[in-house]
Length: 147
Image (cartoon, rainbow, N blue to C red; front, side, top):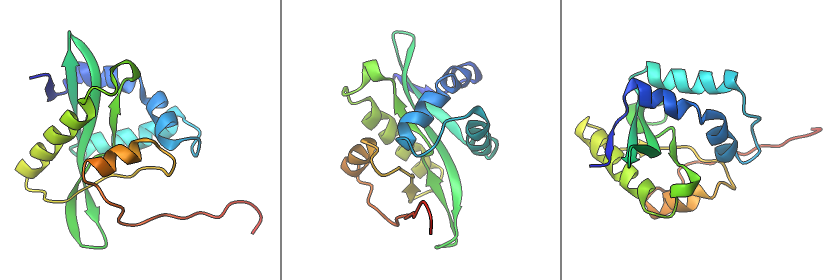
């Protein structure tokens, strides 16, 4: 099976792409920085989160983060996907869907029946998430400039 829990070395390899992932995921709304990345990633990893990697020909082609979060609206701990990324040369081959299925399987096995993720408006991945069955739950709106 090409999907497995990432080793420490594989996690270090994933982290080399952090600024690229952040830049692509935030579609210009956030200036990628190592400081911001460290805050996001270490929080996720230090709270029991981990990555699943898709490996073929000894090459990491994509990964998905799995973790948990407390939902203040429902007072439940839920499964979260803080990151789903497939390297550009390997896109459009169904890797993201395979990673998502395995993440869902793992989270269900851990006892979670709700999974959430955040996605910036304008991120093309939002279409993929809808195809995978995610639906909009709430929207954060922003007003910038002189108020």
